[in-house]
Length: 398
Image 1 (cartoon, rainbow, N blue to C red):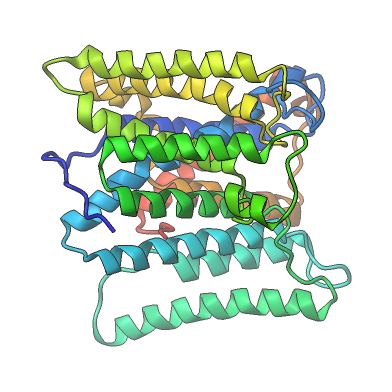
Image 2 (image 1 turned 135 degrees about the vertical axis):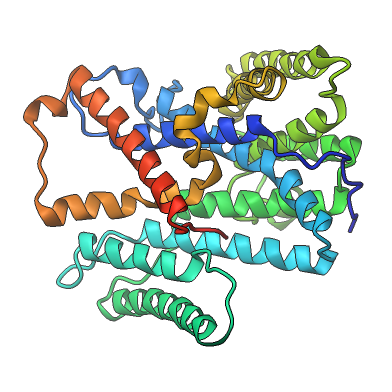
């Protein structure tokens, strides 16, 4: 396991936060628009058999790309604080486990027939999340015992929900792991790779290319069967190698930034990422005759088209925020980039509370431009509410 050679500067990279904030804001938006009428088809997710990439199909992969970008920065920060390799491994393990657990809960939050409704199950689930994974202030004595008891109560509440579902004949299922679960598995793959490669750009690039190759091999139309093929393609690892390739692309993007984004030659980093984007576009065009563009199938074509956008976009955000100093342009949605998990979880409380309180919107907001504007406002309200919770020292962190 390699202890990375830490970069000289430890400043926070505004482009990563801005890219993540915009992605989270748009994720809230695309998760709110299903059910709207008279809305352009290209805004929604494409069907599994549809050769198309809707706008909604570009958001989750962007989130994985952002997650990958943060991996080197997070590991470097922990080494910089003095953590040992074993402590870093432990942190990555618990973070992965937390994401997978939360992903499974959100996947299974449909309520229990004849028991807890979807609304109450979701409310209790979110309460359990915050009690378990909230940031508690450092304390001693009685206050420390109180915080420990609150965390224990959160774990007990989540265990109760699992046992309750099982007792009513609807046990938890892994299924497709849920969004957070998929993020957790991709985070684990990228973090493990980075732990062994450190900040060595060459080794990480080789690892990235191998992961991309695994994505292609695992999506062959008629792949060979058998144990040997599964070992060769590592298809037994949860998640999808196309998703892991998105995460590793973010890792490489960050390492390229740390190597080439210098004040002396500010255009070199942008040129490299734009060139990578062009290569990804060519690969997408070459793959298209063999695979449709499909987020649900996680095809290589979808992967390459996404990366053709994300590499240049990261260069643009870096130039705009870290080079030109325009990060303030995105101040309104900043909480979505710095408290992303909190922002993602809040709708799992918002929607059930709307239902329990009988909140109904005017019929005009169920379709067309008014409906889309309602979804934009909803997304902004969630982000602003996240900011208020953070100011009140309430924030999820894994």
